[in-house]
Length: 158
Image (spheres, rainbow, N blue to C red):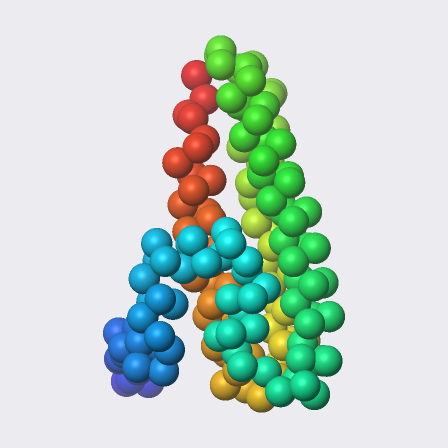
């Protein structure tokens, strides 16, 4: 019974989230293409305008944001290197090398997950919970289209 209730609440939350987001923010943050363009133009400015931080919040939040972006860049570099290796070879791989390439995204994902856990803890200490949740949602949306862009660019190994 508790599992059904929890599942129903999650379903309602997931279904209602886009509508709640759209009501609280301008239309440009709900459209993924517009969000992608805003991130490419200036991600930090997008985050700042989405969160509307007070001076005290900004002083606590921006170091958290910068640390997460550095961690995220490391994970992205690891994936980029694996993608470049596959693209550059453009020929069949040895089994050993295929195993190594298949493991790289998993290792990168584990690093990113660790960084996101740290981000959650630090963001919740730096910001009021609603603003922290809004930022975490925004990062999640950004990661979704970035992951899509990466997936599109990765050819299947031969």
